[in-house]
Length: 276
Ligand SMILES: CC/C=C\CC/C=C/CC(=O)SCCNC(=O)CCNC(=O)[C@H](O)C(C)(C)COP(=O)(O)OP(=O)(O)OC[C@H]1O[C@@H](n2cnc3c(N)ncnc32)[C@H](O)[C@@H]1OP(=O)(O)O
Image (cartoon, rainbow, N blue to C red; front, top):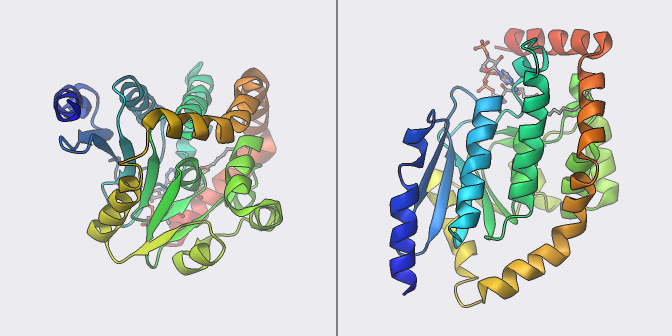
């Protein structure tokens, strides 16, 4: 019975990415019903509007098809995601900035509150928005010798409350305050020490296998009981954004379009290029 349902799921989702622009690939394991969602926007999987829209659609489809688990990973072994595409912040196309932030809100709401158990297979660096995606999952496996953190203050910008809540719910208020105010990027080993990640992996294969092992914990647990429990635990955090989406959007647009922030972002991008 379950096997038949999983096969249907695989058939309907396997080629999902080819219908879109191939920035997100979804593959479902026929036997387990677990979906691997791969971000594939070289060179650094920076999150632009198109990638966010694809990810959002994939999450909706996995919700509708009742996926038994989601593993979120990168197609590169170097960068999980460099966070939000900084070029979006200075995009002058009318309405795009609004669509961009709304798409990010959508992705976070869907991923943070997804009915399926979720694992971030962090097979590369995960600054800022990359860290946010990882924090939205229930379990984090990270490759050694990478970095992760919410470094927004280093860019001269302020992480919204739901970014902060995502970290606070994992490592607690005190460490979140220290991490965000200093824009700290943690090494894999440091991240494990403070509970920001759950396991270290040698390479991507090892990370995927550890992610799958986490999902096996739910093999004999009622999906209904599990997802309702997750909803009780995460519901308030999700609702706090759902209820304030418009205000959050306005705050983002006001702040990001200010001259001061635009100047700071320009300097930051130049420093990234110089760092090569
Ligand atoms: C007002 C505020 C309101 C709301 C807050 C908004 C919240 C924002 C959260 C964010 O996510 S902001 C984005 C923050 N991200 C970063 O700070 C990451 C910056 N990138 C890096 O640290 C590194 O690139 C890396 C560690 C991820 C990877 O290093 P490496 O493999 O050595 O690659 P390169 O640095 O050479 O980068 C390759 C290429 O990609 C460009 N790039 C990197 N990150 C971004 C990005 N986030 N957006 C756009 N483009 C990015 C980089 O400039 C290089 O471009 P080239 O043209 O020089 O090849």
